[in-house]
Amino acid sequence: MLKIRLQRIGRRNKSAFRIVVAEHTLGPKSGNFTERLGSYDPHSDAIVLDKERASYWISVGAQPTEVVYNIFVKEGVIEGKPKNVLPKKSPIISEEQEADSESEDSQNSENAEAENVADSEGTKEDSAQEPEKTQDESESADENKDGE
Image (cartoon, rainbow, N blue to C red):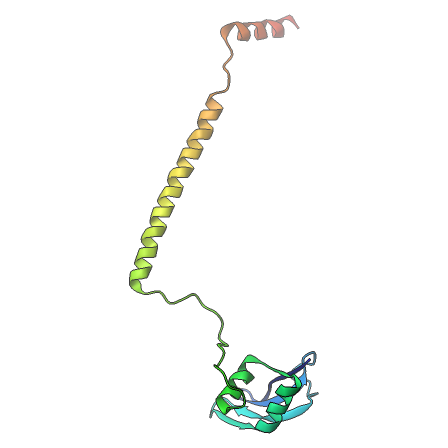
């Protein structure tokens, strides 16, 4: 399967990228790409792109990565909304919602503690309910020991 992706070039702390069509199994630094479509400089936000060839490769079935997809949307090669490429985080919660969730959490923890206490008391009661030996049974046990 062909991918349209970025290939990093440039120096340390001064990255630039080539937009290339390559087989998805080949590493991005291998240099074995099918065709070079353009370049992208994130520092100056400069994009050089051969739009006709990009649309050709998409029509053939090459899949763009999410970042390249966003570049194509920005340049007008593909119509659509940009994709979120940032890692997923927990949703932003306002202070009021946070206070509500904390009060619910504290109530839940209090209920859980009460259940744990009840459970531990139940186990103590269970162990206390072992049948106690009567005086006759304990005497007969002692006689058996003495007789041996």
